[in-house]
Length: 343
Ligand SMILES: NC(=O)c1ccc[n+]([C@@H]2O[C@H](COP(=O)([O-])OP(=O)(O)OC[C@H]3O[C@@H](n4cnc5c(N)ncnc54)[C@H](O)[C@@H]3O)[C@@H](O)[C@H]2O)c1
Ligand SMILES: [Zn+2]
Image (cartoon, helix red, strand yellow):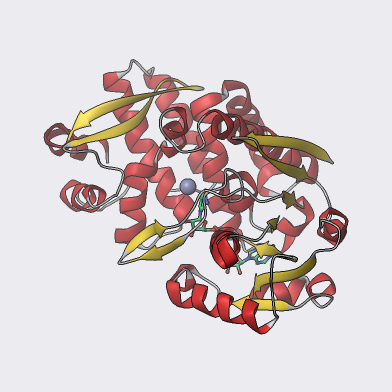
């Protein structure tokens, strides 16, 4: 097992990679009553643990990341007489963790919570950094808080039951952190594509640990995304738009978004053409898309609705080399002129 402590504004969160979900009870604070929030898929596979606790089950999928689900969680917490002596364990992927984390951090002005993170995407991304929330008014993650879980258990063995498309979606976030911060990890990924796709446990553990370390370090320096944390949006400005328009998985859309950003970087930041090809080749070998048939106009219009826009400028995360990200403010007019070249 690999342990990492993450300290954001004096709040400690413990990340446990390679720990078994069956050991979750050992991390519960003394004298706290645990209540598990999960979804039906996960409960079906991992009921050996969920059966031992009161359970709140939510629906599967992004369409359940709503205020209605939140309301149902509050109602169930009340039904279980949850109070400040209660502890919420979110056992699931990014959706369960985001919604349950938000419910716990607002119920009675906040009760403590922890995560057993069950998807590759949530292990390397969603469960680290303290962002939680729900979708609202057609916008993703519109309502939420910054609030850190006491612990995050990333049991790599749980990834064995993950559907292939979900697994591949998570790989995109690993390529992302390698591209923005860690050329060595990028090259490791290139050398181990076969083992990764076979879900070799040693290789998976290595890439999850390295990715978590990168995200944890970035978030520790900038929990509230005033500066450095922005680099984690690499591939996401246009990726989110592609996700909304095309309905493909988050990781697949981010993969397309990373390729747009990489091609842009070659023109603006001197990212060598060979590096653009390397990124494209790696994503393709991992089973991720590298282009879209959507129009530049549609992508831009959708991206402009993104809450991260500041006036008429979008901060694009670009690369000057594999392993080094730079943030460039680009005007909407310029994006309009250039975007179609990079699709
Ligand atoms: N908070 C953050 O910083 C952050 C970062 C990135 C993404 N997110 C959010 O994460 C969400 C996506 O998360 P996700 O990709 O984990 O999706 P998800 O939670 O919907 O899980 C994907 C699917 O896999 C199933 N599943 C989960 N674990 C399983 C397992 N071990 N075995 C079998 N089936 C399993 C789930 O039931 C679901 O059907 C999005 O809503 C996104 O906004 C949040
Ligand atoms: Zn993402």
